[in-house]
Length: 132
Ligand code: ZN
Image 1 (cartoon, protein in one colour):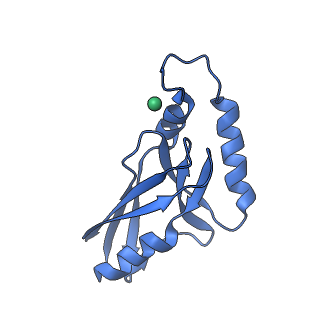
Image 2 (cartoon, rainbow, N blue to C red):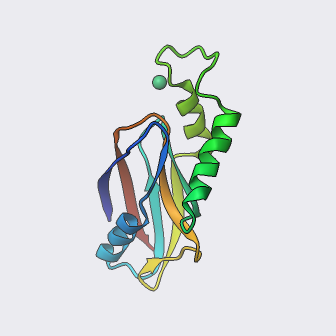
């Protein structure tokens, strides 16, 4: 099963919790045991799985990435969004998650986040659910 959904991001840098949308695809697949592959087909956004209880964690990750890869260069890429390309590569564009008992097997405090680094934009998320 393969599904695409869209996410409107609200800031230049922001995290969007997409756990409910991914869980809905898993549920609709009717697959009890297997894996779920989540990808974003973008070069200035990424994915991470991290704490979804305290929003400060998302802000801290964005702040830490900004220290590592400042918005202002010097960079060579003429579009002016090199920092976003680098952050996308650091986090990666995909995750593989376990499906068991018909649902995602995430830790208690884990959520799946679309990580925007060049927003606001409308982003796509691709989800495959594959039976074991
Ligand atoms: Zn660019």
